Length: 354
Ligand code: NAD
Image (cartoon, rainbow, N blue to C red; front, side, top):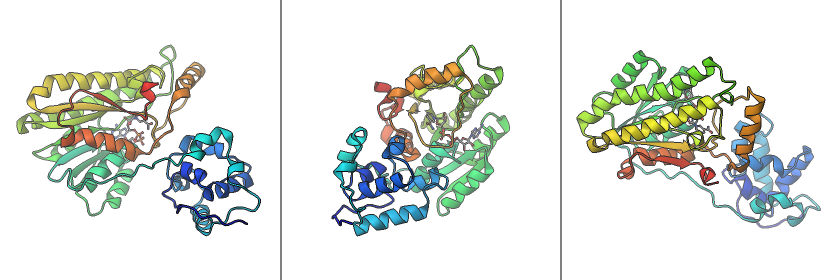
């Protein structure tokens, strides 16, 4: 066993930086090799903090494994006979030879203090990360989700924050009324984030059931909540609305016909509203997320859809964590977005530039 000095590696260090490290890289590769695998398995997630593997791998990479890795790296326990350079897979050279800068969420204390912000889809993924960031930056969050269990969990994690959970379905008028009433007299901002995927079917195969459900939630639900908050925002002289589009609002190769058409509709709804209400002080923008690690479900019900979407995905960047989307969404929601109205902001690591 050789001992080499290294930068401190922890669970918060990205997988790429573990692999690039002269001590961490060999230890991690050795561990993978013992399980019959190479560092290639990490390619799609290499920018993530390594601790994320504990939740994502469903037991395959346990907390104990991570603790042991961190311990071995701190002790400089490079496996005997393994040289740092010799284990670098040529394909992984970019990630392995360059220590990538890691993004860390930086809380802007008080950015939402005194503001009431409605966030839909607050129980999971991008909505949850956005609701969390607003709550931690002092906002009063009306956290909306169809899942009581997910909202309970969210609330428990934000015990000291001003969170008002509303279990409801954004396609249902009674739920919309409940959300608006929970918000009260002022609605400073609305983040319409709840949404669902389709089954990747091209228009020749799409079922009425998939088409209707995807449009009902992604488009009609988004419209209903916008419509419900507009009178309050007009009366108070302004507000900020952020809708959630998708890469599928920018191109035809990211999903099936229903989801792609629904997200193009969200872009249209956003631009129409920005144009109509700009003079009244209401800003309406959308974020178009690229691949993000969440609980969203997508399946491939069509061989043609699977084959064609795979082509579009060949230039897709690595997926990111939902906090990275919350950073873009909260920028547009906040007063920092003061002069931005009617944009569809791609938050996709550059996918739309490909
Ligand atoms: P997610 O499934 O992790 O979270 C969505 C949440 O919305 C869930 O908690 C769900 O219970 C809730 N929800 C669903 N239908 C609802 C309804 N009718 N009423 C109230 N709540 C409802 O998904 P996510 O990936 O965080 O998706 C959030 C948004 O981002 C969606 O609009 C999605 O289309 C968009 N998006 C996601 C990705 C991605 O890669 N994850 C990429 C592009 C766009």
